[in-house]
Length: 121
Image (cartoon, rainbow, N blue to C red; front, side, top):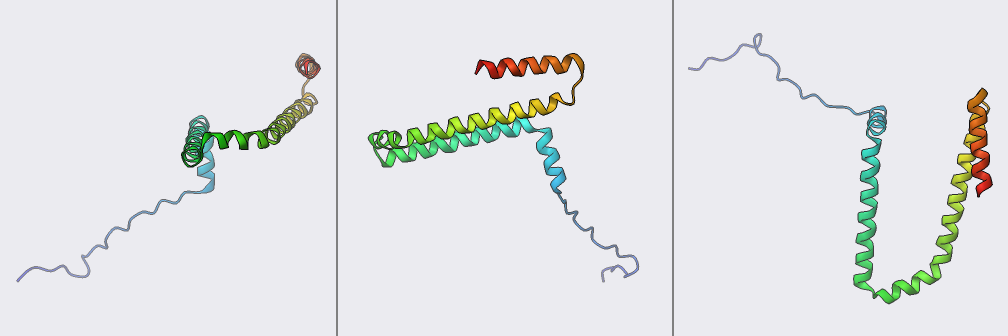
Protein backbone atom coordinates (compact mmCIF):
# COMPACT_ATOMS: atom_id res chain seq x y z
CA UNK A 1 0.00 0.00 0.00
CA UNK A 2 1.04 3.58 0.24
CA UNK A 3 3.49 5.03 2.64
CA UNK A 4 2.07 7.27 5.35
CA UNK A 5 3.77 9.83 7.53
CA UNK A 6 4.08 9.18 11.15
CA UNK A 7 2.83 11.73 13.66
CA UNK A 8 6.36 12.49 14.78
CA UNK A 9 7.57 13.60 11.36
CA UNK A 10 4.46 15.55 10.31
CA UNK A 11 4.99 19.31 10.20
CA UNK A 12 2.10 21.66 10.81
CA UNK A 13 0.85 23.73 7.89
CA UNK A 14 2.21 27.27 7.90
CA UNK A 15 -0.25 29.80 9.24
CA UNK A 16 -0.95 32.84 7.04
CA UNK A 17 0.43 36.05 8.44
CA UNK A 18 -2.17 38.67 9.22
CA UNK A 19 -0.96 42.19 8.56
CA UNK A 20 -2.04 44.62 11.24
CA UNK A 21 -2.14 48.31 10.45
CA UNK A 22 -2.05 50.76 13.30
CA UNK A 23 -3.33 54.32 13.42
CA UNK A 24 0.23 55.57 13.75
CA UNK A 25 1.21 53.86 10.50
CA UNK A 26 -1.78 55.41 8.73
CA UNK A 27 -0.92 58.88 10.01
CA UNK A 28 2.72 58.44 9.03
CA UNK A 29 1.67 57.37 5.53
CA UNK A 30 -0.62 60.39 5.21
CA UNK A 31 2.17 62.69 6.43
CA UNK A 32 4.70 61.22 4.03
CA UNK A 33 2.35 61.43 1.04
CA UNK A 34 0.40 64.56 1.97
CA UNK A 35 0.66 66.27 -1.42
CA UNK A 36 -0.54 63.19 -3.27
CA UNK A 37 -3.41 62.56 -0.85
CA UNK A 38 -4.42 66.22 -0.90
CA UNK A 39 -4.47 66.27 -4.71
CA UNK A 40 -6.51 63.07 -4.79
CA UNK A 41 -8.99 64.53 -2.29
CA UNK A 42 -9.39 67.73 -4.31
CA UNK A 43 -9.83 65.70 -7.51
CA UNK A 44 -12.46 63.53 -5.82
CA UNK A 45 -14.30 66.61 -4.53
CA UNK A 46 -14.33 68.23 -7.96
CA UNK A 47 -15.50 65.01 -9.58
CA UNK A 48 -18.31 64.50 -7.07
CA UNK A 49 -19.49 68.10 -7.30
CA UNK A 50 -19.44 67.93 -11.12
CA UNK A 51 -21.46 64.73 -11.03
CA UNK A 52 -23.96 66.32 -8.65
CA UNK A 53 -24.31 69.41 -10.83
CA UNK A 54 -24.75 67.27 -13.95
CA UNK A 55 -27.41 65.15 -12.28
CA UNK A 56 -29.14 68.24 -10.90
CA UNK A 57 -29.25 69.93 -14.30
CA UNK A 58 -30.40 66.75 -16.03
CA UNK A 59 -33.44 66.54 -13.73
CA UNK A 60 -34.18 70.24 -13.47
CA UNK A 61 -33.73 72.99 -15.98
CA UNK A 62 -30.88 75.49 -15.82
CA UNK A 63 -33.48 78.22 -15.03
CA UNK A 64 -33.98 76.61 -11.62
CA UNK A 65 -30.27 76.95 -10.98
CA UNK A 66 -30.50 80.74 -11.37
CA UNK A 67 -33.59 80.85 -9.16
CA UNK A 68 -31.84 78.96 -6.37
CA UNK A 69 -28.63 80.89 -6.86
CA UNK A 70 -30.16 84.31 -6.20
CA UNK A 71 -31.70 83.23 -2.91
CA UNK A 72 -28.57 81.48 -1.63
CA UNK A 73 -25.83 83.66 -3.10
CA UNK A 74 -25.68 86.24 -0.33
CA UNK A 75 -25.59 83.60 2.40
CA UNK A 76 -22.77 81.72 0.71
CA UNK A 77 -20.91 84.95 0.10
CA UNK A 78 -21.25 85.89 3.78
CA UNK A 79 -20.06 82.45 4.92
CA UNK A 80 -17.05 82.69 2.57
CA UNK A 81 -16.08 86.14 3.84
CA UNK A 82 -16.46 85.08 7.49
CA UNK A 83 -14.39 81.92 7.01
CA UNK A 84 -11.71 83.85 5.11
CA UNK A 85 -11.56 86.46 7.85
CA UNK A 86 -11.31 83.84 10.59
CA UNK A 87 -8.53 82.08 8.70
CA UNK A 88 -6.60 85.33 8.34
CA UNK A 89 -7.11 86.23 12.02
CA UNK A 90 -5.91 82.77 13.11
CA UNK A 91 -2.83 83.04 10.88
CA UNK A 92 -2.02 86.54 12.17
CA UNK A 93 -2.47 85.41 15.78
CA UNK A 94 -0.16 82.45 15.17
CA UNK A 95 2.47 84.81 13.71
CA UNK A 96 2.18 87.16 16.70
CA UNK A 97 2.62 84.24 19.10
CA UNK A 98 5.64 83.11 17.09
CA UNK A 99 7.20 86.58 17.47
CA UNK A 100 7.61 86.04 21.21
CA UNK A 101 9.94 83.10 20.57
CA UNK A 102 12.14 84.96 18.07
CA UNK A 103 15.15 87.08 18.81
CA UNK A 104 16.89 89.96 17.12
CA UNK A 105 16.57 90.74 13.44
CA UNK A 106 14.12 87.91 12.65
CA UNK A 107 11.70 89.26 15.23
CA UNK A 108 11.77 92.76 13.73
CA UNK A 109 11.48 91.46 10.17
CA UNK A 110 8.45 89.31 10.95
CA UNK A 111 6.87 92.09 13.02
CA UNK A 112 7.26 94.66 10.23
CA UNK A 113 5.92 92.18 7.65
CA UNK A 114 2.86 91.46 9.80
CA UNK A 115 2.25 95.17 10.39
CA UNK A 116 2.45 95.96 6.66
CA UNK A 117 0.17 93.04 5.85
CA UNK A 118 -2.48 94.12 8.36
CA UNK A 119 -2.14 97.81 7.39
CA UNK A 120 -2.67 96.98 3.71
CA UNK A 121 -6.03 95.44 4.47
